[in-house]
Image (cartoon, rainbow, N blue to C red):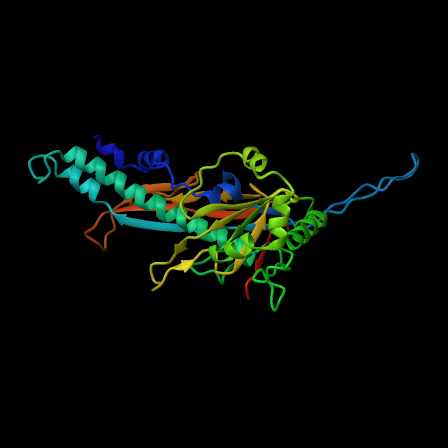
Length: 344
């Protein structure tokens, strides 16, 4: 085990080889992830707009198309900064007759893998929290809490169904409601949603709803099952139903997360909530990272999604493994997804 394994480049390369936790909700929503060359970058946000060209005679002047459907803003993504105690390096340095480990190099490698895996899992959970916050509130968080962030579509609101017009009513036309959402978004954006994700407490009401049962009876269920690709879903996500009339797949999703200073974990998709979007219609862009490879040297700009470095703080006896990343989640169209409370 070479001492150079604890350099920034080596640690980052090792980190990249660790497989991230499988998350079906992330895989469904995110189409691509890109590392930017600068810390701040422009985001061109499309917000509901489809134009057609008016027909003109061959001697008439063409029609000027103003770029009002796009908003260009420069953002500097928030940083995810994590650190853990770098016990692996301590094990490595104690290997010459000073260690209690029978195989110090093996123990150091095992400890390093464990530490990097923990950082990977926490970072991924943080990005999933960002995604779910964007889907349910329209805001991509820019701070420790969800109350500070970017609202790409100022008109985004969470619809709340009430009285008898909720999913609790077996006579309520759920298929018609989802069709209305699908058609409205398609009319405004040209994007057709094909994925609905619901909190688990909504599932029984969907399965017992008369309109859902009628829609599924219209097509042989065996043919539906055969036509659906076999999916391996991560823990917390389950296939609920397929609505052939709308070509919509419904999933349930449950997971929790909390910040270190929070007492209780928060459900990422709150109770009685549903979200709808087109698969792969979001992307993640990562700002470049200006970091010192070690204390006392000039900072360099790293074009990478994530960077890991060993750090030796002057104010502590503990060496650290630090994780840095600057992700920003962006919708393909800011008006092409929705969120509703359906059991109020």
